[in-house]
Length: 373
Ligand SMILES: *[C@@H]1O[C@H](CO)[C@@H](O)[C@H](O)[C@H]1NC(C)=O
Ligand SMILES: *[C@@H]1O[C@H](CO)[C@@H](O)[C@H](O)[C@H]1NC(C)=O
Image 1 (cartoon, rainbow, N blue to C red):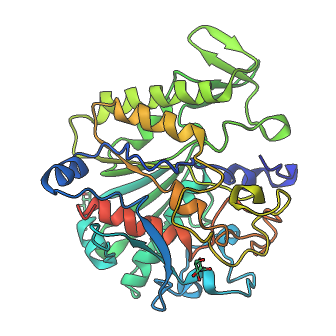
Image 2 (cartoon, protein in one colour; image 1 turned 90 degrees about the vertical axis):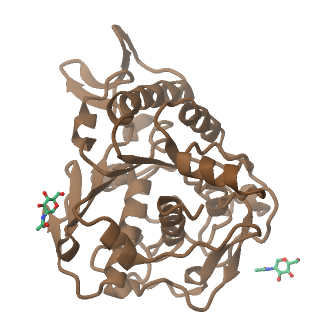
């Protein structure tokens, strides 16, 4: 995992995250999808059966007109010279129908509703892309940002006033509670008090993973606690699994009998190791301007924690739609901010430019929301 300079702790807090997927199996457990699959003879895995093709109508919006893009994602603002990364559309193989995004329809659908992205900076990445896509669909729309500074503490909200639609980002790296105590900062694998802030949302999109492997100065906790047992450390995948179960139990206990739609973002891949895509191991995403050429498996293979995530989701009572973005994102070594991020991370191969890849995530998110997938 990349080291983050201590001086950018806040930005660091927004930094890593996501899950890697790459498996072709679909662990999504959306009722919508199950019904769709049951009723159509041929099955369609929109997240695996596709390819990146150049589409001259892309990007879906002009990022210079979007008022919501933070520096760390604002590649065009900081002079990224190449533009091809903006031109790729995820083309689904037959029998999948090509999903269609309709921002105005989405704003109308969300009238009077609250949509909340909950997680680390990869959730923020998708959130900001979605704000731009909605804003582009209704260019004159009145929006209100709260707090006006844009500070995320722990949340940030944009209201589309003319549609009475509220779109929230809630920052949490671990989903479970991280509590400052006298002894130090305690990561509580079986406590999720902060989830009370997520009640009342009509649509929830979660993610977690990127912060679990952190150690050293960028690890934001001192102890891990489960029940009465406090330890200095433990296997991070095991800790992640326990936290996911705590999260899943909370969702089942609180959202099973509600209309709230729940989504989970697949782990977002980073590109710091060229050998993952057949280049030299020392190569990173720096200077990459083209996707990985291929429709086969990603050479670097799936992200192991993605399997954990799939199995936890599959065992839940509440249907949770798994937005399995890992594989299609693994192919996009060209889509990271690299050095065009205003100096926030000086070489970022974890996040994604906005406009860019997260727009495709949102096309698929919209397709899932509207039963197209
Ligand atoms: C906006 O939506 C909220 C939540 O559904 C509702 O209580 C409120 O009355 C709505 N306001 C307007 C102006 O429609
Ligand atoms: C990908 O590889 C195929 C076959 O080798 C080639 O025809 C095609 O031009 C390549 N595409 C890109 C984007 O490099």
